[in-house]
Amino acid sequence: MDPTIFKSCDIQGVYPGQLSADDAWKIGVAAGRFLPSLIRGYDRGLRNTQCICVGRDMRTHSSELAERLIKGIRCTGVGVIDLGQIDTPQIYFAINHLKTCGGIQVTASHKPAQYNGFSISGHRAVPVGADTGLGDIQHLASSLLHTKGNPTGTVTELDMTEDYCRHVLRFLAGNLRPLKVAIDASNGMAGKLIPPLFGRLPIDVVEINFEHSGTFSHDPDPLARKNLKELRSVVKEQKCDFGLCFDGDADRLTVLDEKGHQVANDHLIAIMVPYFLRRKPRAVVVYDLRCSRVVSEEIIKRDGTPRKVGVGQAFMKKAMRDTHAIFGGELSGHFYYQENFAADSGFITLVHLLNIVSESNRPLSELLRPLRRFHASGELSFTVDDKPKTMETLAKHYGDGKINHLDGITIDYKNWWFNCRSSNSEPVLRVNVEAKDSDLLKEKVRDLVDLLGKPMGTGKHASEF
Image (cartoon, rainbow, N blue to C red; front, side, top):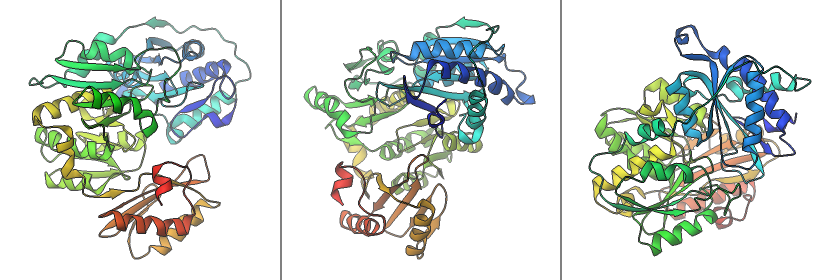
């Protein structure tokens, strides 16, 4: 078993090659042994403590991997609820709705078609990552010397579409006005669920890349600007109120306003702040530390409590539960909701955006205009030989700033700030810079380039500085 398929928060690799069907069986056995052990004494009332939900995305090899995974789980005597072809947020719903000890989604999320993998959650849809059990699963799976066993655990096929749609649509406000929305499903799971979810609403959905062939018209990564070209054209040509692009497993999204301009996800968080804080005054809102200062300013302005956390769903979901936050968001396009088991959902985000645009009766670009009061670099990546030493160098060089070591190093000044995080798998540092004006931003990024070298890549942000 290739150890490189085990990442910080999931399992991913090229199939076949890095990842095999035998690996799926072994991971199933390991998960079947591990996930039931997470049930604590006060959780013994769960109906299905010895049962694991399994879903899969639309990739051509997902069915085979799911079948082998299920057999592995069943060989431990643990039962399986096979949910079929679903989006990743639906596995979170199923775990909580069916009260199982956990769930596994077969998916490679936003990766190209040759990739696949497994996203594993424990009871209550708590993420299983490198620090919360994925290392144990890797050890158990890697220690198996064969792929033989007797599948004694039960398997039940279950279609949860109706229950899931009811759950998502319960967040819809009653005053929804007719809107025209372009949706690029990226040939992923959004293409399956959007029609039953929104087909009966006063929404004119312009469908883009809804077909499932196991291949992608463009890579299913909604953050990459090149993947938004088709959506941008449709939004402008068909005069849509806004557009959305989902990733492959429909847990992340990117929004375009009615002019076809990409909405930064931290600005989308800021748009949602007054909407949620009206419903629950003085509530906590969680966001990742790469987000613009505008997020914390908007939360404080409306008497909410800002909670900045490290990057990734493990940090976000834990903070959501610990603080009883009403909602939270990441720069990556994951949005989390208290009334969705503190889990993320692309579809629920779409519902709330429909509510916000309907309530305001204003174009999305007008809602965004007052939030664009800072200038951001976007994420810049730098190759370095010694990541810890480079971090120390940054801390010394900017020692007159306010330093925070949460998830890398964040250094704050009155008119600008930056965060520098270490990649989990590469000799790379990720840097985000924000300043009050564009000239100051360019100056500060140039200073960082002098210390770190030229940014990787040839994209807009890398080539500007």
